[in-house]
Image 1 (tube, one colour):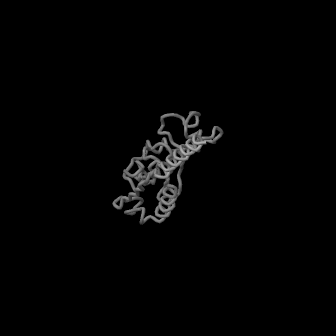
Image 2 (tube, rainbow, N blue to C red):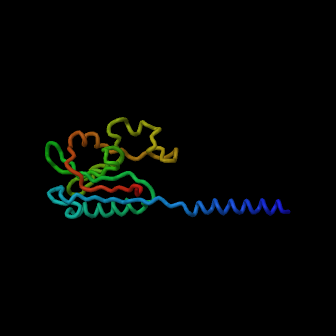
Image 3 (spheres, rainbow, N blue to C red):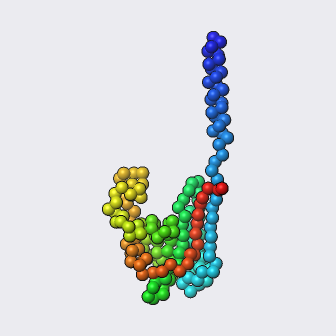
Length: 173
């Protein structure tokens, strides 16, 4: 009987200690960074995030959705200003990661979406790489995202002029 009580007491103590550890673990805290370039001139307007109406609205929606679930790391997202090498026409490019690869959306100065989708930087054909983590998406039957059909030509004929804004979520140090 004493052995049974002793064993029960040991198990009770171990369960309390292990539960206590779980209760004292500190959750990871994340830092949210938004940077807006007030000096950039885009589509004939200085500080386009605040002065170009369609971009102002797009930025608000984009920012709200980006930070709405900041419970984990996210890829940084950038809003860039590009210029056509021949016509000098401006374009706004939203870019996941800021590396001109991954998810790209291209807008003209009127706010019309020119194209958008997955772009791989010209390294390989996105739809041919069936082992890509982007295609599998934790579901072997997932449909691959649409590719950005004009990105290859766009990045060959347009020059990055400036960064309009960016969003970053990272662990606090």
